[in-house]
Amino acid sequence: MSRYEHDFTHMFAGLEKQIADTDNPRHRAILKNYRMHGLLEVAGRYEELLAPDMTVEQPHYRLHEGGQSLILDGMDQVTAFYASLVAANALVMWVNRQAIAVHDHGFSGEVEFRQFVPGAMLGESVFGSVQAGEDPDDVYLLTRTLAFVWPYDERGRLIGEHVYEDGASRRIEKPDPADVITAARAAELLAPEIAREIA
Image (cartoon, rainbow, N blue to C red; front, side, top):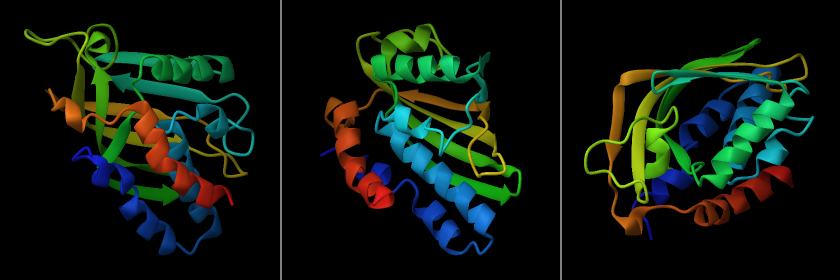
């Protein structure tokens, strides 16, 4: 078993407490949407998080990471983005630490993310650049701090993601292969929690 599995499966422990302590129905709905969005995304089930009951018909994402900016405008571009991450096996990520504030418009906060990223992606994407000695065929553990602003519509549906990386926080490590959580294992670990939420 990967030494990261406990942190992975308990990534939203703090958020769950925040939901339980939140009385405002709209704020609770926004936080619950965020939690389910995260579970579905990491499980590779992006079609479900983009369903009309969770996300607006024309979402708008603004992602500023690795010294690059990526603007995704509309459902087609957002769907293609998620599909590309699934194809590249780059969706296994988890929240290490987070502090978020929820308001009527949505939520914002600062989150430390950890993510398994194929070495090939480190040289051609917002995830970074291949360093000397890094093998594009290996999997690396990327850790960085992100600031989030996620707006929601009047029905509590996600309008989009605005993500800003603290470049100075970026670390790339080579994990023990036994500690890498595969996409299939991530989906297996999160399936029971997703099922409980849907039931």
